[in-house]
Image (cartoon, rainbow, N blue to C red; front, side):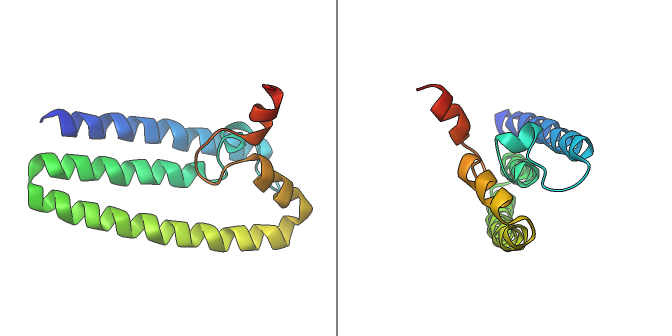
Length: 124
């Protein structure tokens, strides 16, 4: 158990915190477009948590064996690509379902990670 293993453990812990935050936001929002809590920072925080878990497993596998690391890295990249493709489909669905409200949400909130545009304007 070396540094890559422990880095993976930290990433999984962060992913868990993000994932629980998404559940809390869903429960508080109850219905409609969820744009509160962690969803003010990212439109897809649940997928960010999954990305972190895949990356963590890659680090852990790399620590155990370089071939397993390469295989896990390949699987991770494949999953990230597939999840991104799913996100694009969800965005089309949500834009049809919520219309202008969703477009406003897109304008102020990054797809994955970044500084929300609302925060940038308040600092000026």
